[in-house]
Length: 230
Length: 137
Image (cartoon, rainbow over all chains, first blue to last red; front, top):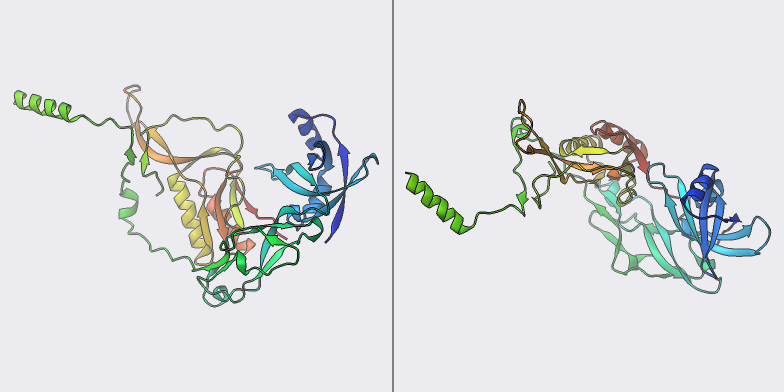
C-alpha cells in the first residue's frame, strides 16, 4: 500500500470570497475531518492532481504534514472532491482522517482485464455497469484497484459482484447479485426511413393533463342550441 | 423525434438560463461524453440530428446514451399575423441546457473515434461543446 505525502496549510477565512481568492492563486480550499473538530485547510492544486493522477481518489493513503511544522503527521484519505462542471478544475477537497486500526468504507475502482470473447469474435460491446465497488477494510489494506478478467465473456454474459476475486482483509459491501460487467450485442443498424414520409409528418401533440374537458351537461346544451337554430 | 407523451400544460414561458449545470454534469454511463460549454435551447430536431450523426460515425461499434430530453414547448405565431390575440401555437420542443451539461455519452470505441464522432455531432447542435473523458488509471 503506497502512502503519499501531502503538505497542508491551515486556513483562517471561510466563505466564497476567500475560496475564490485561493483558487485564483492556484490553491484549493479543503477540509479535514474524522477525528476531532473539522479543520479548514488549503492545498496546492498541483499537489492534489499529483495524488489523484491515475488512481481513484479515496484509495490513496495520505500522510498530511502542516507547512508550519505544528500538529504532527496525520493519516487521511481523500473522501470527496468537487470539480467545476465546465472547466473541470478542482474546487474543493474533503480529507478524512483515519485510524490505522479501524476499518473504513471506501470506493475502489473496477477495471476489466483482457479482451472479451464477445467483443473479439461477435463484435459485442463491453459494458461496465459498476465502475466502483464499496469495500470495508483497514486503511493499510485498501486495494488500489479490483481487476476483473473478462476474456471469457460472450454476448449476454454477466459478471456479478459475487464473482469478483476475493482480496484478503477486504469485504465487498455491494449486493452480491449486482452486475459489474457485461457484453451487450452490437447496435442494430438503422433502417433509413422513407424520405417522403419523415420530414412532413407532423408529430401528434402530447396529451395535456390540465386541459378543460366540457362537462356532459354543457355538451347536451350546445347540441340543443344547435337544433333550435336549425 | 423526442417529445413528451403527456404534459401538464400545453404552452410554457421562456424562463432564464442562469448559472451552470449542477446535475447531469458528470459521466454516468459511458467513457466519453459531449459537454455543453454555453447555455441554450437544444431542439428535438438538433438532438435527433446529432444522434444520427453519432450512430453513423460509429457504425455498429459503440453504444450511445442521450442525456437530455426536450420537455419544453416553444410556440410561434403564424407568419404575417398582427400582434396580440394570444400566445402562438406550440411548434417544437427544446431541452434547456446550461454550461457543463453532458448531452451524449458513448462507450465501446477508442478515444480518437469518440472525439471525431463528437466533433461531427457537436456541429449539429446550436451551442459550443467539448468532448470529455472519464479519468481512469
